[in-house]
Length: 340
Ligand code: GTP
Ligand code: MG
Image (cartoon, rainbow, N blue to C red; front, side, top):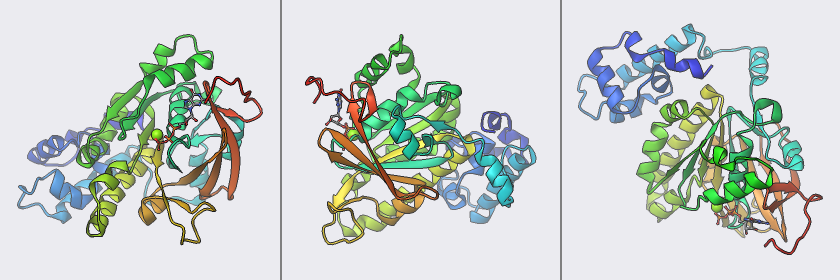
């Protein structure tokens, strides 16, 4: 569905040319971008406050026109579908192996497209290592449990390590690890505003780089650093919410997998937190927006993944280890004494 979405052009819609120019200046380049825009944001972003005769009502009309054009062309699903149609559609979703069979069966096949998978855990728990391994496995063709596509890696913590991905690929027996590195498009983010702009224009990047997997490592670090103090919490949450909703729509319409990492905070008095009192940050906004929520725990040399929230997984947990080859089943793990 997604690839042909680029073929419908804004110019094909019944929209005044000066509005098209304004939309394009705001990074809304395709009918698809417009269809997933939030009307009140369009007034602020696309119109920059200068479009005096335009109010939210007109913005809503623009979005509705774009959606209708996509529905009419069979590129977007209509508002109401039967449950049976939805089940059929779910058959199209793809699953990306994590390279670790236990983790894959825990995930019922792997990391899913059309969904946001959140991986939360304390420092060193393996969040980034999961992302790096997925960078390699996503490159595999569909019949080898990959996504057969490129990767967009949004690095907000400045921890991205290409050499680690090279090492994982090498240890997985891939002959040309450089080939894989060439298919990973990395964007280093400096502050929350930068992240917002990148997410706003992400639809275009997904199409341009033919990405099937988007990762944000981490989704919340910058927000936590920039919005300190109780007085800024509401704004922080609102901005985070907009980012997550955009990611969710992109996942669905482009049939891509989105993985975000999250930090944890200690909440010793909170009974709903884990045994160790650790809980994913971002409050209800994070909890509601992500489809699957996985919590990682360190357990000596191994790691435990816990499915904390999912629309169709039971509460479950599994163990894996991190080796030179990325994520691996615990049985396969041999302590060579060289690893740390
Ligand atoms: P923060 O980004 O600090 O919040 O942590 P994180 O959860 O992203 O941690 P990350 O995924 O970077 O995991 C780091 C851990 O992975 C290290 O403490 C090691 O245990 C493990 N690790 C990283 N590289 C290797 C490697 O080459 N071999 C082995 N065996 N383990 C590794
Ligand atoms: Mg990390």
